[in-house]
Image: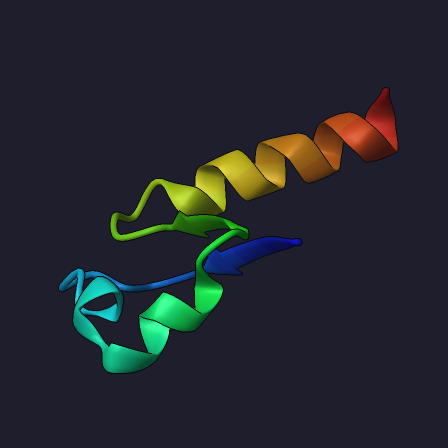
Length: 49
C-alpha cells in the first residue's frame, strides 16, 4: 500500500508510537514546501499529456 503523509514540517510522524503500524508499506512523508509543486506538475502532466 502507498501512503503519503503531507505537511509534516516538523518531522514528528516518525516519532509517534503508531508509526510502527505502517511497517511494510510504502510511506512517503513530505516535510517541506516542495510537495505541492511535484503534485501539481504530475497532475497537469496527466491531464495535458
